[in-house]
Amino acid sequence: MRLQRVVQSLALAGFLWLLFLNSYPLPGWVEVDLFLRLDPLLSVGTMVAARAFVPRLVWALVILAAAFLLGRFFCGYLCPMGVTIDLWDRLNRVGRRRGRDANPVSRRLRRSKYLIWIGLMGAAAAGFSAVFLFSPLSLMTRFYGLVLHPLLLDGAALGLGAARPAGEWLGWEDFRYLQLREPVFSTGLFIACLVIGVLLLGRFAPRFWCRYLCPAGAMLALCSRRPLLRRRVSDACIRCGKCAENCPMGAIPEDFFSTNHAECIVCLRCREICPAGAISFGPAPANRRAAAPAPDMERRHWIGAGLTGLAAGAVTMNGLGQLFDGTARADLRSSRLVRPPGALPEQAFQARCVRCGACIEGCPTNTLQAVWFEAGLDGIWTPRITARLAACEQFCTLCGQVCPTGAIRPLPLEEKLYAKIGTARIIRSRCIAWEQEKSCLICDEICPYNAIVSRFIPGHSVTVPFIQENRCNGCGYCENKCPVDGESAVVVEVVGEVRLMSGSYRQWARERGLVLEAPRAAEETVLAPPGEGEDAPAPAEGAQPKLPAGFDLGE
Image 1: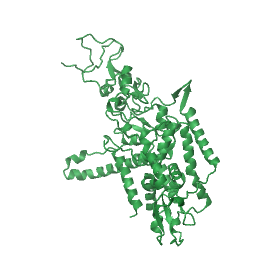
Image 2 (image 1 turned 90 degrees about the vertical axis):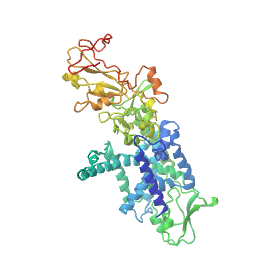
Image 3 (image 1 turned 180 degrees about the vertical axis):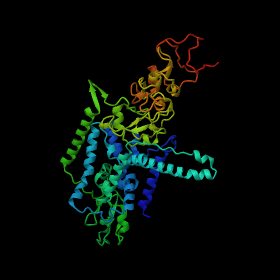
């Protein structure tokens, strides 16, 4: 087996293994977002858009520096996108003996990845991070985590259901209760179509994405024009042309002796297929390290791509995603667009979020989902809390721990409890107690912060719920468990959300009188006597409130 295939297999296995570990509780001995931090496009694009140095992304800069010595080894051996494309091409037998760029049109296509990269950097300079559209690591994390993972779980669940009768027949009592968690994710179909489209481009040329479209490959190509490790051809060459015909990147010109090092991914295929053994790879003498030809682009192409990206980013950020009120920016987004706990302020959050889906895939309750246009065009595919689907688990901090760019702060648990993500609001026209005067205490009983209290009000024979806003964390348990069909009678909105770039959430909350702690069992549950309003004083000491039928305070 070729060395490249061995390394690629190990790299893909490692990527999938870390994705598998991306679940609650996280292992403390490994960084599950390691591969995401190796993507140079993701790293540089995020830091330009955020206008800040992100220490977690420094490994991608190491990859760029290593390209000066080893060429585009990352594309040929480590990138999950490259491994997936090679596997797909091998299984479908496409791209065989079509490595050479056969016409000037295909050669000019190579400039596309540079134009895309410059455009993305221009948009990032305007504050709009669009790298998620082309980042190979972001695309692969979403594809494997949000598309293939649920499909595999669905298949396993079907197999389990089919095998359950056999387990019962064999007397395995526990087998009948065995279930698999089957998460659901929005935007999965679009992501699947996007990746399948990338794979099908291999019908036109092997590694079409890597040759012509990948902006991360463009960055590595610019660093690989004069690498230390390079292809060498001896005088034993018989000019059979097999090396050029089988090169997956079309990096070997028609003279067969020279090499376009900016395109070479050091896959060693040419060396293995050479019938004369004339090809080797190794360090070249300093006086023979000729640089690869520059990209087939003029200065106007570079400037035009940069200005186009800058203008697109400015238009996207100005009016479509935000409104301006004097000197302060106000977010133009739905009041129901609740972000994960620890998310940075909206503008900084969108600049740093690379839409990799790691937080969405790992969320233990499945409440995190990707949005479409609720946050404007610049907020597409960012995560949100979908409380009607599931609540945000109060003892989980996974989303901040797996975020590779710090768009969601990695908060310790004692800080996360104070990261208020919104405030619940009761829609009285839908509430069973308010509208139908039927007893319902579900939201009151389920709230882990004791932020919902039930009270008697004039004209009602049953208690009705009220929200204590200074106690509400916005976790969404009330919205998730509300028994009303369709839209919940209690919804979580962004009113009162706390999003800090730095500093202590706990200190911020306490300074403002927020009581965001899970109360003790003996905490207050207000049951005011009939005839007294919401702001009525508490009953005198020793007095017993009037309770609805079936309730008893006990001893």
